[in-house]
Length: 165
Ligand SMILES: CC(C)(COP(=O)(O)OP(=O)(O)OC[C@H]1O[C@@H](n2cnc3c(N)ncnc32)[C@H](O)[C@@H]1OP(=O)(O)O)[C@@H](O)C(=O)NCCC(=O)NCCS
Image (cartoon, rainbow, N blue to C red; front, side, top):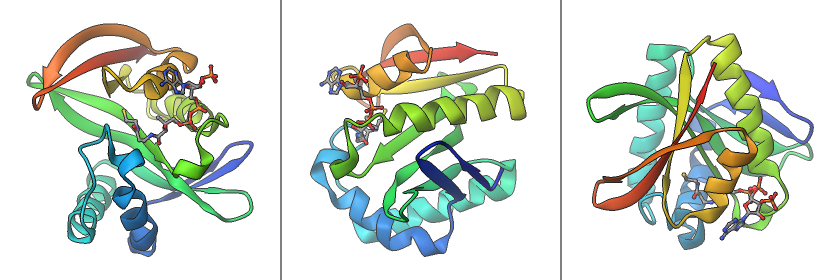
């Protein structure tokens, strides 16, 4: 679970060595647009701590992704999230701007969905996406998630997609 790889990506359990790459990723306004906005280095450090603790507590979480030539590609994973008082597992992903549009997110999402449904035997996974985030919606659709409903979350209009085992 700490590592997996796909045709073009390697994934490593998030750890302290990924901090600088995560800080840079979260400082890019294009990347941050639909995921809560640009984050300071301090906020990303806290984010890293929370997500490392998630691994310790649950045995899964976010991975740092690299292309096969070793370049940082982004972060993605599976994590607990409360939605209307229900404990769900969401799929999450954010990629370096220069790599968008090459199918990397769908490649990672497909692999993580298999891990969630088959290896972790979770009954279902959800994706929560800003209604205007067309690229992310398309990633979920390409990974066979179905649109479940739209709702408002933290003041934003979002759509919830789901895939079942
Ligand atoms: C969303 C994100 C992960 C997509 O990564 P990616 O590697 O470019 O995704 P893929 O190449 O696998 O697929 C993107 C798909 O969306 C399509 N797309 C791109 N922009 C789109 C838009 N504005 N509207 C609709 N579809 C769009 C692409 O054409 C592609 O579909 P296709 O393969 O059928 O042509 C990337 O844009 C990102 O990191 N965004 C910032 C973080 C973020 O928003 N994460 C998701 C939070 S829910």
